[in-house]
Image 1 (cartoon, rainbow, N blue to C red):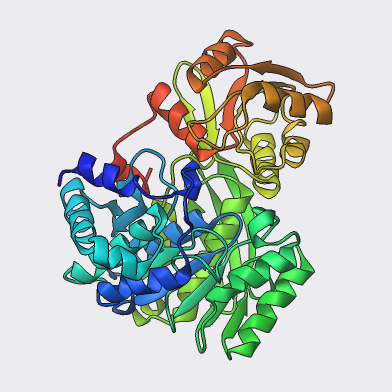
Image 2 (cartoon, rainbow, N blue to C red):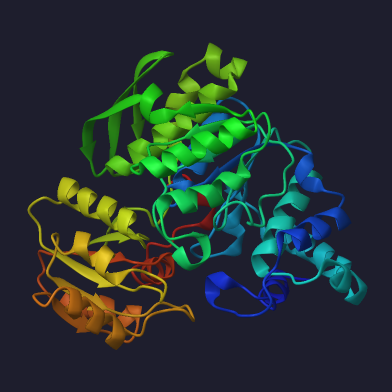
Length: 447
Protein backbone atom coordinates (compact mmCIF):
# COMPACT_ATOMS: atom_id res chain seq x y z
CA UNK A 1 0.00 0.00 0.00
CA UNK A 2 1.47 3.35 -1.05
CA UNK A 3 0.57 6.73 0.42
CA UNK A 4 -2.15 7.46 -2.15
CA UNK A 5 -3.77 4.08 -1.49
CA UNK A 6 -3.60 4.72 2.24
CA UNK A 7 -5.42 8.03 1.88
CA UNK A 8 -8.09 6.48 -0.34
CA UNK A 9 -8.64 3.76 2.27
CA UNK A 10 -9.04 6.32 5.07
CA UNK A 11 -11.37 8.48 3.03
CA UNK A 12 -13.67 5.56 2.35
CA UNK A 13 -15.19 5.98 5.82
CA UNK A 14 -17.62 8.57 7.23
CA UNK A 15 -15.89 11.84 8.10
CA UNK A 16 -17.79 14.68 9.77
CA UNK A 17 -14.92 17.10 9.11
CA UNK A 18 -15.36 16.85 5.35
CA UNK A 19 -19.08 16.21 5.23
CA UNK A 20 -18.89 12.51 4.31
CA UNK A 21 -21.99 11.12 5.97
CA UNK A 22 -22.55 7.68 7.38
CA UNK A 23 -23.03 5.86 10.68
CA UNK A 24 -21.11 7.73 13.38
CA UNK A 25 -18.36 5.96 15.30
CA UNK A 26 -19.12 5.53 19.00
CA UNK A 27 -16.57 5.59 21.78
CA UNK A 28 -17.39 1.91 22.37
CA UNK A 29 -16.35 1.18 18.77
CA UNK A 30 -13.14 3.11 19.33
CA UNK A 31 -12.33 1.05 22.41
CA UNK A 32 -13.02 -2.20 20.53
CA UNK A 33 -10.75 -1.12 17.67
CA UNK A 34 -7.94 -0.26 20.10
CA UNK A 35 -8.41 -3.60 21.88
CA UNK A 36 -7.75 -5.35 18.57
CA UNK A 37 -4.48 -3.39 18.42
CA UNK A 38 -3.51 -4.30 21.98
CA UNK A 39 -4.54 -0.95 23.50
CA UNK A 40 -1.47 0.96 22.30
CA UNK A 41 -2.79 4.23 23.78
CA UNK A 42 -1.97 2.99 27.28
CA UNK A 43 1.79 2.61 26.73
CA UNK A 44 2.83 6.27 26.99
CA UNK A 45 2.40 9.19 29.40
CA UNK A 46 -0.39 11.41 28.11
CA UNK A 47 -1.23 15.10 27.92
CA UNK A 48 -4.79 15.49 26.63
CA UNK A 49 -5.82 18.92 25.28
CA UNK A 50 -9.36 20.20 24.71
CA UNK A 51 -11.08 23.58 24.33
CA UNK A 52 -12.87 25.71 21.75
CA UNK A 53 -9.86 27.64 20.45
CA UNK A 54 -6.10 27.42 20.80
CA UNK A 55 -5.94 23.62 21.20
CA UNK A 56 -3.49 23.12 18.36
CA UNK A 57 -1.20 26.01 19.31
CA UNK A 58 -1.15 25.01 22.98
CA UNK A 59 -0.40 21.39 22.09
CA UNK A 60 2.51 22.45 19.88
CA UNK A 61 3.90 24.79 22.54
CA UNK A 62 3.83 21.89 25.05
CA UNK A 63 5.49 19.45 22.65
CA UNK A 64 8.15 21.98 21.69
CA UNK A 65 9.08 22.68 25.31
CA UNK A 66 9.31 18.96 26.10
CA UNK A 67 11.56 18.46 23.07
CA UNK A 68 13.86 21.26 24.21
CA UNK A 69 13.98 19.64 27.65
CA UNK A 70 15.29 16.43 26.08
CA UNK A 71 12.09 14.38 25.95
CA UNK A 72 10.82 12.60 22.86
CA UNK A 73 7.23 13.47 21.92
CA UNK A 74 4.39 12.24 19.77
CA UNK A 75 1.85 14.87 18.77
CA UNK A 76 -1.66 14.26 17.43
CA UNK A 77 -3.56 17.27 16.07
CA UNK A 78 -6.39 17.99 13.65
CA UNK A 79 -7.37 19.06 11.10
CA UNK A 80 -4.43 19.28 8.72
CA UNK A 81 -3.72 21.99 6.17
CA UNK A 82 -2.09 20.11 3.30
CA UNK A 83 -1.44 16.48 4.25
CA UNK A 84 -2.76 13.91 6.68
CA UNK A 85 0.87 13.44 7.67
CA UNK A 86 0.70 16.71 9.61
CA UNK A 87 -1.69 15.13 12.14
CA UNK A 88 0.93 12.73 13.46
CA UNK A 89 4.31 14.21 14.41
CA UNK A 90 7.28 12.81 16.28
CA UNK A 91 9.47 15.46 17.87
CA UNK A 92 7.48 17.96 15.79
CA UNK A 93 8.40 16.25 12.51
CA UNK A 94 5.34 15.01 10.58
CA UNK A 95 5.32 11.29 9.97
CA UNK A 96 6.89 10.16 6.68
CA UNK A 97 4.73 8.70 3.93
CA UNK A 98 6.22 5.22 4.21
CA UNK A 99 5.55 4.85 7.95
CA UNK A 100 2.08 6.37 7.55
CA UNK A 101 1.21 3.95 4.74
CA UNK A 102 2.62 0.96 6.59
CA UNK A 103 0.46 1.76 9.62
CA UNK A 104 -2.68 2.20 7.53
CA UNK A 105 -1.98 -1.14 5.84
CA UNK A 106 -1.90 -2.80 9.27
CA UNK A 107 -5.27 -1.26 10.10
CA UNK A 108 -6.73 -2.30 6.75
CA UNK A 109 -5.59 -5.91 7.21
CA UNK A 110 -6.97 -5.93 10.73
CA UNK A 111 -10.35 -4.66 9.63
CA UNK A 112 -11.46 -7.63 7.61
CA UNK A 113 -15.18 -8.31 7.43
CA UNK A 114 -15.22 -10.13 10.75
CA UNK A 115 -13.33 -7.40 12.57
CA UNK A 116 -15.55 -4.67 11.13
CA UNK A 117 -18.61 -6.52 12.36
CA UNK A 118 -17.02 -6.86 15.79
CA UNK A 119 -16.02 -3.20 16.07
CA UNK A 120 -19.08 -1.54 14.57
CA UNK A 121 -19.18 1.81 12.75
CA UNK A 122 -15.76 3.31 11.98
CA UNK A 123 -14.86 6.86 10.97
CA UNK A 124 -11.86 8.41 9.26
CA UNK A 125 -11.03 10.33 12.44
CA UNK A 126 -11.27 7.16 14.53
CA UNK A 127 -8.89 5.35 12.18
CA UNK A 128 -6.42 8.24 12.25
CA UNK A 129 -6.57 8.25 16.04
CA UNK A 130 -5.92 4.50 16.16
CA UNK A 131 -3.11 4.95 13.63
CA UNK A 132 -1.46 7.53 15.87
CA UNK A 133 -1.50 5.24 18.90
CA UNK A 134 -0.27 2.29 16.81
CA UNK A 135 2.66 4.31 15.45
CA UNK A 136 3.53 5.59 18.93
CA UNK A 137 3.62 2.05 20.29
CA UNK A 138 5.93 0.91 17.47
CA UNK A 139 8.33 3.80 18.01
CA UNK A 140 11.57 2.94 19.79
CA UNK A 141 11.02 5.59 22.42
CA UNK A 142 8.33 8.16 23.09
CA UNK A 143 8.34 9.86 26.50
CA UNK A 144 5.13 11.86 26.09
CA UNK A 145 2.12 11.78 23.79
CA UNK A 146 0.27 15.08 23.39
CA UNK A 147 -3.23 14.37 22.11
CA UNK A 148 -5.56 17.10 20.85
CA UNK A 149 -9.27 16.31 21.18
CA UNK A 150 -11.16 16.31 17.89
CA UNK A 151 -14.60 17.47 19.02
CA UNK A 152 -15.89 18.03 22.55
CA UNK A 153 -14.29 15.60 24.94
CA UNK A 154 -16.49 13.04 26.68
CA UNK A 155 -17.46 11.16 23.50
CA UNK A 156 -14.45 12.02 21.36
CA UNK A 157 -12.46 9.19 19.79
CA UNK A 158 -9.36 10.35 21.68
CA UNK A 159 -11.01 9.92 25.09
CA UNK A 160 -9.71 6.40 25.65
CA UNK A 161 -7.56 6.69 28.78
CA UNK A 162 -8.52 5.39 32.24
CA UNK A 163 -5.90 7.73 33.60
CA UNK A 164 -3.51 10.36 32.26
CA UNK A 165 -1.01 12.89 33.51
CA UNK A 166 -2.66 16.13 32.34
CA UNK A 167 -6.05 17.26 31.05
CA UNK A 168 -5.55 20.71 29.51
CA UNK A 169 -8.41 23.13 28.82
CA UNK A 170 -7.93 26.07 26.49
CA UNK A 171 -10.63 28.82 26.40
CA UNK A 172 -14.17 27.48 25.90
CA UNK A 173 -16.92 29.21 23.94
CA UNK A 174 -20.06 28.21 22.06
CA UNK A 175 -19.39 26.13 18.94
CA UNK A 176 -20.99 22.96 17.53
CA UNK A 177 -23.96 23.84 19.74
CA UNK A 178 -26.18 21.15 18.22
CA UNK A 179 -23.71 18.50 19.36
CA UNK A 180 -22.01 19.91 22.46
CA UNK A 181 -24.58 22.22 24.06
CA UNK A 182 -25.90 25.76 23.75
CA UNK A 183 -23.98 27.42 26.59
CA UNK A 184 -20.27 27.54 27.54
CA UNK A 185 -21.12 25.67 30.75
CA UNK A 186 -22.85 22.86 28.85
CA UNK A 187 -19.95 22.64 26.41
CA UNK A 188 -17.47 22.65 29.30
CA UNK A 189 -19.37 19.72 30.86
CA UNK A 190 -18.87 17.74 27.65
CA UNK A 191 -15.20 18.66 27.40
CA UNK A 192 -14.66 17.90 31.10
CA UNK A 193 -15.29 14.25 30.26
CA UNK A 194 -11.54 13.95 29.56
CA UNK A 195 -10.68 14.53 33.23
CA UNK A 196 -9.63 11.21 34.79
CA UNK A 197 -9.15 10.25 38.45
CA UNK A 198 -5.95 11.63 39.94
CA UNK A 199 -4.81 13.58 36.89
CA UNK A 200 -3.95 17.28 36.93
CA UNK A 201 -6.34 19.67 35.22
CA UNK A 202 -4.80 22.73 33.60
CA UNK A 203 -7.51 25.36 33.03
CA UNK A 204 -6.72 28.33 30.83
CA UNK A 205 -8.50 31.67 31.15
CA UNK A 206 -12.27 31.21 30.81
CA UNK A 207 -14.50 34.18 30.02
CA UNK A 208 -17.60 32.33 31.23
CA UNK A 209 -18.03 31.71 34.95
CA UNK A 210 -20.25 28.72 34.28
CA UNK A 211 -17.54 27.03 32.22
CA UNK A 212 -14.95 27.75 34.90
CA UNK A 213 -17.14 26.35 37.68
CA UNK A 214 -18.01 23.26 35.62
CA UNK A 215 -14.33 22.37 35.13
CA UNK A 216 -13.63 22.93 38.83
CA UNK A 217 -16.54 20.68 39.82
CA UNK A 218 -15.61 17.93 37.36
CA UNK A 219 -12.04 17.94 38.67
CA UNK A 220 -13.16 17.78 42.29
CA UNK A 221 -15.43 14.80 41.58
CA UNK A 222 -12.50 12.61 40.54
CA UNK A 223 -9.94 14.16 42.90
CA UNK A 224 -8.00 15.78 40.10
CA UNK A 225 -5.70 18.62 41.10
CA UNK A 226 -6.56 21.82 39.22
CA UNK A 227 -4.24 24.58 38.12
CA UNK A 228 -6.25 27.75 37.43
CA UNK A 229 -3.91 29.51 35.01
CA UNK A 230 -5.73 32.86 35.18
CA UNK A 231 -5.31 32.98 38.97
CA UNK A 232 -1.82 31.52 39.25
CA UNK A 233 -0.12 33.05 36.18
CA UNK A 234 0.05 36.68 35.04
CA UNK A 235 1.29 37.35 31.52
CA UNK A 236 1.67 40.73 29.83
CA UNK A 237 2.83 41.56 26.32
CA UNK A 238 6.04 43.61 26.23
CA UNK A 239 6.74 43.97 22.51
CA UNK A 240 5.20 42.79 19.26
CA UNK A 241 6.00 43.03 15.57
CA UNK A 242 5.58 40.78 12.57
CA UNK A 243 8.68 38.77 13.52
CA UNK A 244 7.22 37.74 16.88
CA UNK A 245 6.37 38.99 20.34
CA UNK A 246 7.74 38.91 23.87
CA UNK A 247 5.81 38.75 27.12
CA UNK A 248 6.46 38.82 30.84
CA UNK A 249 5.09 35.92 32.87
CA UNK A 250 4.79 36.12 36.68
CA UNK A 251 3.99 33.00 38.69
CA UNK A 252 5.12 31.11 41.79
CA UNK A 253 8.26 29.90 39.98
CA UNK A 254 9.32 33.52 39.43
CA UNK A 255 9.12 36.18 36.74
CA UNK A 256 10.55 35.55 33.29
CA UNK A 257 10.40 37.06 29.82
CA UNK A 258 9.50 34.70 26.99
CA UNK A 259 9.37 35.09 23.21
CA UNK A 260 7.25 33.46 20.54
CA UNK A 261 7.00 33.87 16.78
CA UNK A 262 3.28 33.13 16.97
CA UNK A 263 1.37 36.40 16.74
CA UNK A 264 -1.54 37.85 18.69
CA UNK A 265 -2.46 38.23 22.35
CA UNK A 266 -4.36 34.94 22.16
CA UNK A 267 -1.04 33.16 21.53
CA UNK A 268 0.31 34.64 24.76
CA UNK A 269 -2.69 33.05 26.48
CA UNK A 270 -1.88 29.71 24.79
CA UNK A 271 1.82 29.97 25.63
CA UNK A 272 1.03 30.73 29.28
CA UNK A 273 -1.25 27.69 29.44
CA UNK A 274 1.59 25.58 28.03
CA UNK A 275 4.00 26.96 30.64
CA UNK A 276 1.53 26.05 33.38
CA UNK A 277 1.13 22.55 31.96
CA UNK A 278 4.86 21.95 31.81
CA UNK A 279 5.56 23.34 35.27
CA UNK A 280 2.78 21.22 36.79
CA UNK A 281 4.67 18.10 35.66
CA UNK A 282 7.60 19.07 37.89
CA UNK A 283 10.08 17.53 35.44
CA UNK A 284 13.57 17.71 36.83
CA UNK A 285 15.17 18.64 33.52
CA UNK A 286 12.85 21.64 33.21
CA UNK A 287 13.25 22.64 36.85
CA UNK A 288 17.02 22.53 36.51
CA UNK A 289 17.12 24.40 33.19
CA UNK A 290 14.41 26.99 32.58
CA UNK A 291 15.85 27.64 29.12
CA UNK A 292 13.82 24.66 27.85
CA UNK A 293 10.66 26.75 28.22
CA UNK A 294 12.34 29.75 26.61
CA UNK A 295 13.62 27.73 23.66
CA UNK A 296 10.45 25.68 23.26
CA UNK A 297 8.18 28.69 23.04
CA UNK A 298 10.47 30.55 20.65
CA UNK A 299 10.85 27.54 18.32
CA UNK A 300 7.16 26.62 18.05
CA UNK A 301 5.08 27.70 15.07
CA UNK A 302 1.86 26.72 13.35
CA UNK A 303 0.84 27.60 9.82
CA UNK A 304 -2.56 29.13 9.16
CA UNK A 305 -2.87 30.85 12.53
CA UNK A 306 -2.40 34.59 11.94
CA UNK A 307 0.24 33.64 9.41
CA UNK A 308 1.59 36.69 7.58
CA UNK A 309 2.82 35.99 4.05
CA UNK A 310 4.50 38.67 1.96
CA UNK A 311 4.18 37.77 -1.71
CA UNK A 312 2.97 40.19 -4.39
CA UNK A 313 1.33 41.90 -1.41
CA UNK A 314 0.71 41.13 2.26
CA UNK A 315 -1.64 38.28 3.09
CA UNK A 316 -2.88 37.25 6.53
CA UNK A 317 -4.01 33.63 6.71
CA UNK A 318 -6.04 32.70 9.76
CA UNK A 319 -8.41 29.78 10.31
CA UNK A 320 -10.74 31.72 12.66
CA UNK A 321 -14.12 29.99 12.46
CA UNK A 322 -16.09 31.03 15.53
CA UNK A 323 -16.91 34.23 17.39
CA UNK A 324 -14.03 34.14 19.85
CA UNK A 325 -11.42 33.33 17.23
CA UNK A 326 -12.83 36.12 15.02
CA UNK A 327 -12.45 38.51 17.95
CA UNK A 328 -8.84 37.40 18.42
CA UNK A 329 -8.18 37.86 14.69
CA UNK A 330 -9.69 41.37 14.71
CA UNK A 331 -7.58 42.34 17.74
CA UNK A 332 -4.42 41.06 16.04
CA UNK A 333 -5.21 42.95 12.83
CA UNK A 334 -5.61 46.17 14.83
CA UNK A 335 -2.35 45.49 16.65
CA UNK A 336 -0.16 44.64 13.66
CA UNK A 337 -1.85 46.65 10.88
CA UNK A 338 -3.44 49.60 12.71
CA UNK A 339 -3.65 52.02 9.80
CA UNK A 340 -4.07 49.77 6.77
CA UNK A 341 -7.31 48.80 5.01
CA UNK A 342 -8.27 45.13 5.14
CA UNK A 343 -9.96 43.09 2.41
CA UNK A 344 -11.48 39.90 3.78
CA UNK A 345 -11.87 36.67 1.85
CA UNK A 346 -14.36 34.70 3.90
CA UNK A 347 -15.51 31.09 3.64
CA UNK A 348 -17.60 29.40 6.33
CA UNK A 349 -19.28 26.08 6.91
CA UNK A 350 -23.01 25.75 7.46
CA UNK A 351 -22.77 25.30 11.23
CA UNK A 352 -20.99 28.64 11.79
CA UNK A 353 -22.57 31.81 13.19
CA UNK A 354 -22.04 34.33 10.39
CA UNK A 355 -23.46 37.27 12.37
CA UNK A 356 -21.23 36.66 15.40
CA UNK A 357 -18.09 36.26 13.30
CA UNK A 358 -18.66 39.30 11.08
CA UNK A 359 -19.60 41.42 14.13
CA UNK A 360 -15.92 41.36 15.11
CA UNK A 361 -14.35 41.49 11.66
CA UNK A 362 -16.46 44.33 10.28
CA UNK A 363 -14.53 46.92 12.25
CA UNK A 364 -11.30 45.97 10.47
CA UNK A 365 -12.50 46.14 6.87
CA UNK A 366 -15.64 46.98 4.94
CA UNK A 367 -14.98 44.88 1.83
CA UNK A 368 -15.55 41.14 2.11
CA UNK A 369 -15.43 38.60 -0.70
CA UNK A 370 -17.68 35.67 0.13
CA UNK A 371 -16.44 32.39 -1.31
CA UNK A 372 -16.64 28.67 -0.72
CA UNK A 373 -14.27 26.16 0.79
CA UNK A 374 -13.30 22.73 -0.49
CA UNK A 375 -15.72 21.09 1.92
CA UNK A 376 -19.16 19.57 1.44
CA UNK A 377 -20.50 21.61 4.37
CA UNK A 378 -19.53 25.01 2.97
CA UNK A 379 -22.04 27.86 2.71
CA UNK A 380 -22.52 28.74 -0.99
CA UNK A 381 -21.03 32.19 -1.78
CA UNK A 382 -24.37 33.79 -2.70
CA UNK A 383 -25.99 32.57 0.52
CA UNK A 384 -23.03 33.73 2.58
CA UNK A 385 -23.20 37.16 0.91
CA UNK A 386 -26.92 37.42 1.72
CA UNK A 387 -26.29 36.54 5.36
CA UNK A 388 -23.49 39.10 5.60
CA UNK A 389 -25.66 41.84 4.12
CA UNK A 390 -28.54 40.91 6.42
CA UNK A 391 -26.42 41.43 9.51
CA UNK A 392 -24.48 44.41 8.12
CA UNK A 393 -26.28 46.35 5.35
CA UNK A 394 -23.35 48.77 5.09
CA UNK A 395 -20.88 46.04 4.19
CA UNK A 396 -19.47 45.93 0.69
CA UNK A 397 -19.92 42.28 -0.25
CA UNK A 398 -18.75 40.55 -3.41
CA UNK A 399 -18.87 36.86 -4.29
CA UNK A 400 -16.36 34.47 -5.83
CA UNK A 401 -16.98 30.88 -6.84
CA UNK A 402 -13.64 29.66 -5.48
CA UNK A 403 -10.51 30.73 -3.60
CA UNK A 404 -8.55 31.40 -6.77
CA UNK A 405 -11.15 33.84 -8.09
CA UNK A 406 -11.46 35.47 -4.67
CA UNK A 407 -7.72 36.07 -4.45
CA UNK A 408 -7.65 37.54 -7.96
CA UNK A 409 -10.52 39.88 -7.09
CA UNK A 410 -8.87 40.96 -3.84
CA UNK A 411 -5.57 41.69 -5.54
CA UNK A 412 -7.33 43.88 -8.11
CA UNK A 413 -8.66 46.07 -5.31
CA UNK A 414 -6.74 48.71 -3.35
CA UNK A 415 -3.01 47.95 -3.56
CA UNK A 416 -2.50 49.28 -0.02
CA UNK A 417 -4.91 46.77 1.50
CA UNK A 418 -3.99 43.68 3.49
CA UNK A 419 -5.77 40.59 2.17
CA UNK A 420 -7.04 38.47 5.07
CA UNK A 421 -8.21 34.93 4.26
CA UNK A 422 -10.28 33.49 7.08
CA UNK A 423 -13.30 31.49 8.24
CA UNK A 424 -11.94 28.01 7.62
CA UNK A 425 -8.65 26.15 7.64
CA UNK A 426 -9.78 24.50 4.40
CA UNK A 427 -9.94 27.93 2.74
CA UNK A 428 -6.60 28.90 4.30
CA UNK A 429 -5.00 25.74 2.89
CA UNK A 430 -6.27 26.54 -0.60
CA UNK A 431 -5.00 30.11 -0.33
CA UNK A 432 -1.57 28.97 0.91
CA UNK A 433 -1.17 26.81 -2.17
CA UNK A 434 -2.31 29.54 -4.51
CA UNK A 435 0.03 32.23 -3.14
CA UNK A 436 3.01 29.90 -2.84
CA UNK A 437 3.15 29.81 0.94
CA UNK A 438 3.02 26.02 1.11
CA UNK A 439 6.50 25.40 2.36
CA UNK A 440 7.72 21.91 3.21
CA UNK A 441 5.30 19.88 5.31
CA UNK A 442 8.25 19.15 7.58
CA UNK A 443 8.22 22.80 8.66
CA UNK A 444 4.59 22.71 9.75
CA UNK A 445 5.26 23.26 13.45
CA UNK A 446 8.40 25.36 13.32
CA UNK A 447 7.68 28.09 10.75
